[in-house]
Image 1: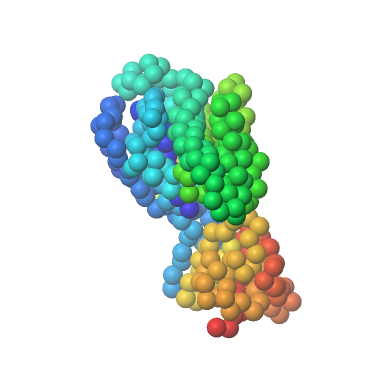
Image 2 (image 1 turned 60 degrees about the horizontal axis):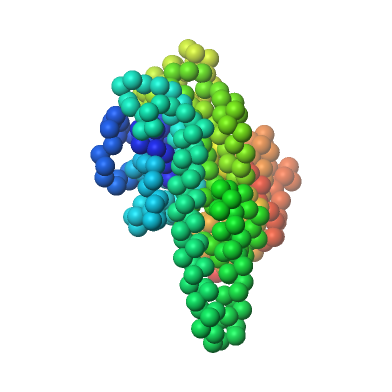
Length: 362
């Protein structure tokens, strides 16, 4: 799962990136003016894994992972004529966008628009994403119309007509100033659009960096920003970055002294999972305890494919128990003795926290 971190120049993107990834990239009051991307892979915080590892004492413990990419600031007007190839390609490869919005003033860090205004800044970046999409859609409409005008193969023409109708829907949505993620699209339509690099179609997590103020998600409510597949969360960016760079024990003591249960960034990562409709199941044993990320609604055979294509190909049954039931039983042997292990077929819909042993034959 890959998430692109975007925002205006000096929006504190790199501060949030450092907090998420325990990184130490330099934060600057001025943009370098160059196209830069920094990536880091982050383990998804999950207490289930720690407790399962304590139960099985495996040689290896593997958490689910998210890749974050910190992308150069999207200055106002950057999409005029279309986003540059490298910038468009980098953002379009992501599964979702994390838009960092600065919600505090800092005289030492000039704001690209003169002063902090979260509602305005979100509208600016949304506008750039939608303009990029509009240019892509208009170019595609021109090509489809030209192909239909040339005539030729009837089957190809029928396909062009269907695609043209879809592109016209997208154009009307963008022309109305609305992101594509608000549209109701059929699975086949989403698949058809997968390789077009449409940015406003991607799920969006808006992170308000509130500086030293209280992290209140309701701060953004006054913007009346209501879009589908969009989540808003507030964060004290500098504090979270400092916490991420502390030794774990020291950070835990700091949180405990303020009565904070966990770093805010853990919640941001979980929100990313929810936004993308992902959850985890586990495989356990003496060799490895591991979390696997799959879409919500995935079947047992699809989960098997996440582990290895051969397991999916030779799938026979999935031996399943919920995490809480396994934890209460204390071991797989005890769970089997209690009759709590279920045998499920290939169409079983995997639940969040399922512990699964796949039976297969290749």
